[in-house]
Length: 92
Length: 169
Image (cartoon, rainbow over all chains, first blue to last red; front, side, top):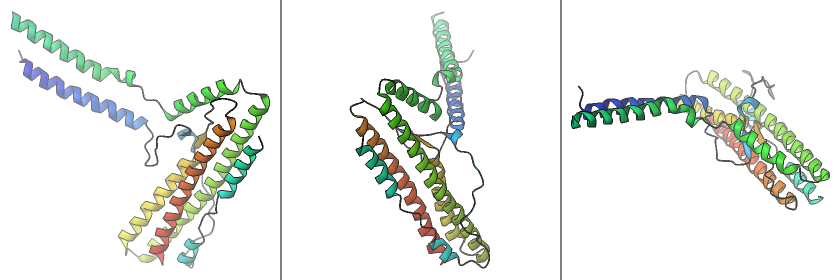
């Protein structure tokens, strides 16, 4: 017959393992991303992300000037997009 | 006899606690992002049904425009990130095993920015409606949020470009 103390230890350990198992199962099902935030409106849907081959802007090869090519990659200014959206609301 | 009953009760209690922890995973069913979106969409659909037809159409049109802008700009940023990665790969090939630390640092930031772009591309913006009278404010709040998030993603791409330029010069 095992003592209460031994029973506590055995079932305590099993309980901790069970808890870890539940957490790990949940983590596997969960989307993990360093970008994750607590955003009530904008939401992230994994099913909407479908990887597809994206055409490159330019062909990078052994004769490319890497510094020049990197310089060309500055993204456009997006402020015009939002200005248009907000101006549209003003007409409502 | 008393000791036996005490031990038995203690053991049964621990057994029940263990069984609860092990088998109750369904009680802690995780809420997925899809669940949240569906809930938000449902709340939005319930609210909008009481709005005028004109406002419903305005919200629908604006929602589509937001989705189009997000897709267009995310696609542009994605192309930039693919090219950044190719530049880094070419640099690594040319370096012949040198400057490994520098290359790994750039690779981290390129990957980080690329992931941010993918994350932004998948976002769905659902208006958080309060009342029909406050429709402009409600919509403006969503636009501001979209602007903030897209610009944040753009900033990450620009930072990744900066780190890349410093390494390949």
